[in-house]
Image (cartoon, rainbow, N blue to C red; front, side, top):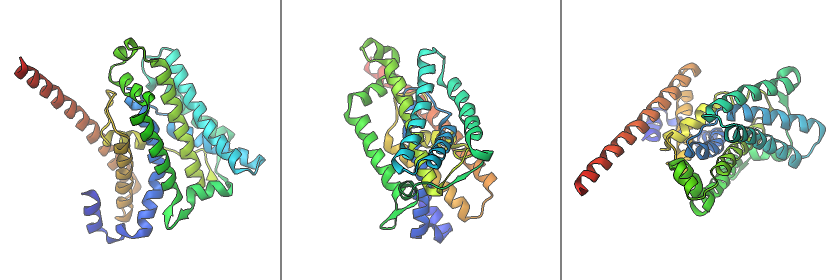
Length: 307
């Protein structure tokens, strides 16, 4: 419905070049939202993904200045992202924090500060290996290569959540952690793994963004955490955990990209675009609350009829 309305308002929206831009621009949000989805499924949240991505690009840029190797640069960004995710998971799980909001808020600030401190001149570093720019900024048959990267990771995550025992464990831990523990599910290990995967996805997002811009910057990923959370919640996941489908998160990411692109085409100021995305988040959260309330009422009525 949104695409139909926007295409009527601005015919330029459906041009192949513009559709390619939307796919390229939403690739980073989509791949990081997949990691955020796993965390939210376990009743958690990761506020550090944007700063994590920025730090990963800076580390990749610094490595590239020393070693002109695409594989080494890509591995550096992926490992940097996963390492931050591991820190989040370890401190949350074994530090017995009441909620991951605390540690991920801390690493949000720490990673951004490290990115600014490590970047020469605290600014953007130009240049990336050819393979990185091809992945993030190249096209195949007119389709951005970043789209294929997102599709590949989407398939892997779909297999993980739907066909593997670990995926079932994630839903069990988010739906009823005490029951999952009683069933012998390694709850701490599952939680730690989800934060590592989320950090790894931030590293993948760093590769895509650094490739698209052919640069590394400590200011990349600003407010990315809000975009990914919005994508997951818009897609139908619940902050109460145990509910959500990977495909819905990807749809949520595309929805955000469409909204932002449409506002750009209509010449709406960037500040009002931020307001629009914020309103979308509020509406999505309220819809989640209303849905949970209606489902609880429906269960009560069904139970009354059975009795």
